Image (cartoon, rainbow, N blue to C red):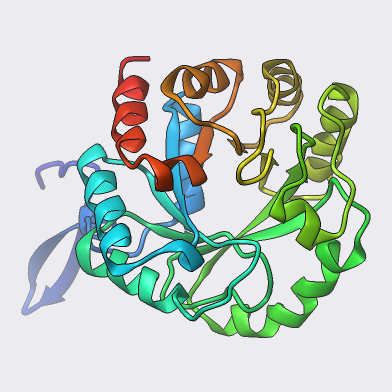
Amino acid sequence: MQNKLPSHYLLIQCESNNKIISFSVKLLILIKKNSIMNIYSQIIADKLKEKKQFAVLIDPDKQTPETIKEIIDISERSKIDYFFIGGSLFTNNHLDFCITQIKEHTSIPVVLFPGNTMQINEKADAILFLSLISGRNPEMLIGKHVIAASYIKASKLEVIPTGYMIIDCGRPTAALYMSNSTPIPYDKDEIALCTAMAGEMLGLKMIYLDAGSGAQNTISENMIRKVKDNINLPLIVGGGIRDVDRAIDIYKAGADMIVIGNAAEKNPLLIENISKAIKAL
């Protein structure tokens, strides 16, 4: 009788000269640290475990070799979950440089958060395929996606369809201006709720509520809570998060993942402080 192997082993039997030769192959190598991970599956797994996730948004336009290295070092030390890469406008060619620097210094996954079709690079691990469901600009709902589809399909990027919702949080932002759309009013929770539900019914895989870079306020806890309670998708919240207390309030309201960008550029130690606070939840 053969001994029973652990469940993470694969038994391969080959018959040769009337003898059974058994080979056991560890399936764990499929998920070893250096293998290609399925990022969306990891986000779902963490959501099911109620593990709060943390992403740092890097705008390549604002980075120098010194600043990008500092952010990478602090993020690695803080064990953040993801780097999001993107911005509303690129005036230089630093996208490839930023991704290359991250890949050379850390294994933290790189997820594209593109503001337009020029912000796509197959050196990244995944792309948020953003549909601006809060607005009525057809280019941001489907138009730009058609232009990029062939290139993305041919790349090795993991594609994560994401319902992107801009919320008015006190002042116009670059994302709002460049998208040429009207944001959801700050206090119109029902509009946000119904928009998110519609995104889920359309088959999108995540919902991203964004106040925009440099927003005066964060999205209200009440809006986050209502959206969270009525969808089953991972909920990402970003924009205007400048301190640890606000980050924790947003997590407690229902965000599965928060994203900080502008505040981290001004104070990289905020990354470490938020990461420590998450672990204490």
